[in-house]
View 1 (cartoon, one colour):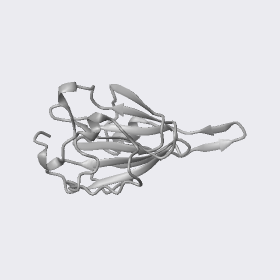
View 2 (cartoon, rainbow, N blue to C red):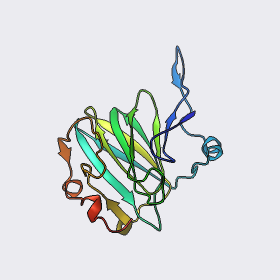
View 3 (cartoon, helix red, strand yellow):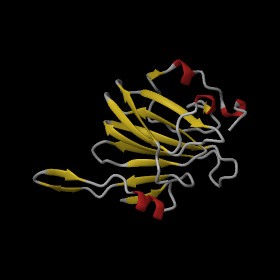
Length: 180
């Protein structure tokens, strides 16, 4: 595996070294020792799946607040998505910066998103599925989010969403967000 730094401090694209032959493909997608050797979390007590039927579906920008912030390792298991990490850590050198990666089930790449960063994605084709490894269990009262289109961040989404939940559409701008 290769860990490629992004524009957000502590966020990495994880690329696999796939081996192909007449049988098909084999790749290691996770190795706790490799993650630990890079100073990254290697224990994930919760995993989630997100299925998305339509191209243009937007989910985000979500995070879990202190005292249980989540680290996420996100991978597309079907389709392609534009996946975004947004740094909301006030003490970070990349505070309010964002990084994006195209997660692609064919490439088997993943996005490591550190605690204190909001996460969201836009599907680039129909029938996408994402698999999340989470460093914390979900705590509903700590769930937070900020607007995907907040001008404070100027995220360069590849297109406007055509599907978005009422909850995500109603998220407040960061300037109005009071608890991280």
